[in-house]
Length: 262
Image (cartoon, rainbow, N blue to C red; front, side, top):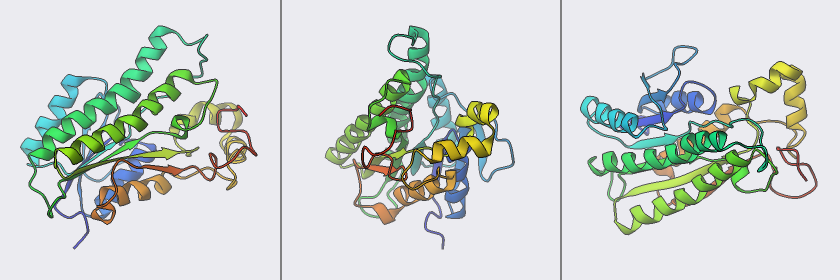
């Protein structure tokens, strides 16, 4: 029997990139996966697709109601959806840009955790003290400073500490719900499409890969495997933790970081 057999998962931003890779891996592990995204997948994916705006509380309420009605349970939430909002320093970022990035990257994760806990509390535990797992995709931008993108860095920093707060609350309440954050470095996903269009994919990837001591960017599946582990009972004793998958980017000061500052 597959390790996630009988479990139900929601992956936001599941139409592409890390989200799409995670959807595929969770499905391979036996989970029934709901891919929730504001845009449909470019290709056929396992599970079912639900159009969803993570920045809307109404959309979150509707998504949870749909999952509980159709599937009767919620075991896993992967808060993966996010935007960069473009490059902007503290001086050049507009209030409108700031609010849009925070609404998706920070508030969207807050809403996801809030309503996932509501659904997971109604789900009978698979095993004693194991009722659910929330995985929040943050960034190395939550761990190192950068002159920009200001709004993105602030939002991802919020996700890092929100995850710890959620983990501790659920532990204190004895819900059996774990929460952890994942911090990727550069991952070859559509978020870099503007760079690929400007430089070409091969040249752009080589340039960004050189910022990582390991000498390359990650593939979406590299992060998907980590998320799968955090979603499963193999990580049952792990909560409130942050997992960095950045090819050594944050390990020292010998190279320029991904955002171009020293």
